[in-house]
Length: 377
Ligand SMILES: Nc1ncnc2c1ncn2[C@@H]1O[C@H](COP(=O)(O)OP(=O)(O)O)[C@@H](O)[C@H]1O
Ligand SMILES: [Mg+2]
Image (tube, rainbow, N blue to C red; front, side, top):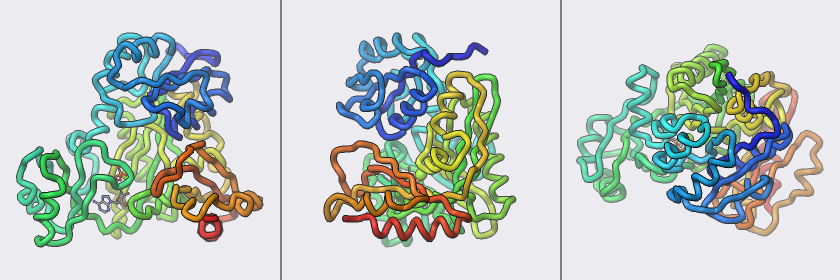
């Protein structure tokens, strides 16, 4: 399999923080990076060789971008799948467009998981204008209603606890295709980041335990505080999913762990994942470097954990009373800070993250909570 060697150009669709950290990892290995992103002054463009601002539907701009790239990848799932097919006629697209097409729509993703016999929560699909109440009855209460398209960070989701809440849910999702999912009263959530190269080599990073606040990732804890069998099951599922979907690149797989220790697939993301940011500071290879290696056909890097670690997301909320206390945070010897260079700090917006390393996961979490609480200005 031909390698795309350092010095070549990697194209990235999407210019957010995942693209930024990818561009930084690629630059360290001597690659050039071009970012394609509709909005100007994006986090990734600021650290790349070139930033192209045009809509994803602009075939002429996409074609010109693709012609300059030796390989194109994406850091954002809501890139329309159709224009990606045009890119594939010009250069290599990794992962292949069909991987994105399957995973960017919740209904298609869940159907794919079911057809391939991967464990997941019970679900039903309701088409736009369909009978939501019938779907809710099929799945049973409590459940979670999710829009099939464009959901992230809990946006486009509603938990339905009782029959009385059905009319409000029907109104909220009127005219949109949705997926209705059984509510899982989970023991915890974990995720695994898997990388697969063009020659089918696979590496799975150590499993992270994830704590969400308001549906947005708050902490990732590594090693996950779960039974070895649970971590092994999550790793194995990630590997099997990567193989079955014919991944070339990196994929994040989110899971629910039930109180009886069953591991259910929640979501797939065919890109680096927020719950893998800890790899930048506490792993032999970061998920971003692994993405570069995978899409360029280089040997995959070792996924050895170097220290127990906790990653903390920094949301725009931390700016509520002015600039966060970076001085206090940076005074800690066991902390590494990553900021994404976003100008506007809106509540719920991911502005950066930090990691805390310690002798064990519980200690790292305790310190992480303490530093997080002290951060707002
Ligand atoms: N069926 C469910 N049962 C219990 N919790 C859920 C369920 N679906 C979502 N959640 C909670 O909401 C979070 C976000 O949902 P998810 O489906 O991963 O959407 P996204 O990350 O795209 O917003 C999950 O990580 C979990 O904490
Ligand atoms: Mg999710």
